[in-house]
Amino acid sequence: MPEFNSTTTGLPYSRVMKIAIDYIEPLMAVVEVTTQEHVPLIDGSHRPLGSADTFKFQINPADLATGTVPLRDVNTGALLDMEMSLMQIFGGVNAVIRDRELAYYGIPVAPAETPTDLPIGE
Figure 1: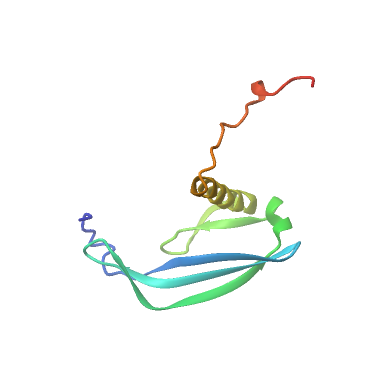
Figure 2: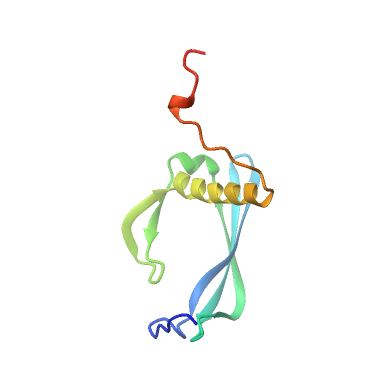
């Protein structure tokens, strides 16, 4: 049984249940996020409260090179005086997806080439 934490047990929080990205045209994507309020229980499990909510927003993938997002405290929403580029965020998400995809299909992955492994002058 997980260690009991009286500071979080029974306190509702919002959990992201699903993120879908639909590229509607070459330079525009619609992101659909489904959230649901959950509550942690004394046994370490989490239970949903009420129904799920969905919201949508558009992003321009071309903004990945220059766009930034302010980082926020996950509990309070307060600004953390830091930001990440959209490229870092989506690059990380895409790296995880590709890694899991290769593992799912059992595709062996060779180590990345280093500059010293590359042929010179060819």
